[in-house]
Length: 378
Image (cartoon, rainbow, N blue to C red; front, side, top):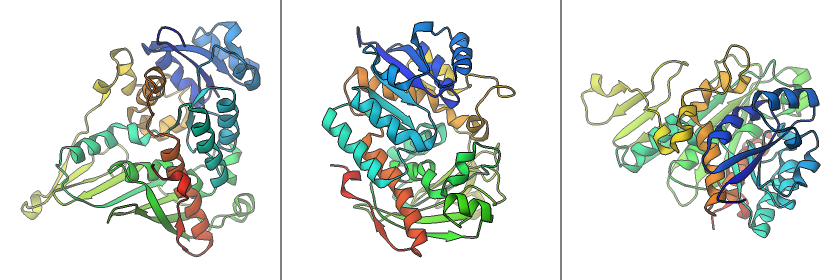
């Protein structure tokens, strides 16, 4: 890193390519290198964004050996997240990794320990806690407009048919951070323990691949040092529901409810009003003003046109709430100013392990599972 410019490398150029022009325009970043196993795909993206030939890698190991790389933004398939994260940390690189952190509690522990041993930055690039909807609720909460938080809930039904085959091997709660993060992030709480139940049944071929029979997994989370509990649910296959990443917050003064159908406005409920006046639809503002001016435009639009090139997760997720430039900025700024990113490694592990332990709980008939010590804030 020189002159406060952070050299960023992006690994995985499907969803990952969405971030290239954001880093290119970020005042503290240098969009330095890209990595993709398939050379034709690598060069297509490299040509589109004018990445120098010498900084295009088909080998992740060779990229990590480049001393000029300061941080890597990992967007590889889920089953590779832990391996690729640990490789980067051990090569002396800061890491931002798309969700989830890992698919085992042990891998989460190893990442946390490696971050604390090396002093490097790690953040899980969780879109929801940088979405305009979440930032709106967080602002209401911090201003005191919600009053005392009484209950939190979130849902993420998503039909994964047509996605890469590795999704057929996933358990619903193994990809739960989109619903865990807002219910823990709002009051900056750790999860203390979880209890989860499975419901319904997926097809026999999916059961054989995933090792899990459940169509839906539904979990209660006890927030540490709090009287609040939260409820979340996830589904991946064989459940009819439009894609939805929802977050509801119920307070003593006001409550926020996510719209039931994509394209509608959310609802604010206000206490102490005549019954017909309690609910009111609201338009959520954009939060680009929190970002450097050079990248504010990316809260409103994706990198590619939606009809031809946008990644399926971006289309289904309604643009991820304008979160992408916030994620890039958080990573770069934490390195440039030597501060902890949000979420940091322990927070990322807590959010990820909620889902991993929730699935264990479901397989054990709802048995309470406590979050391990390494996931708790110091």
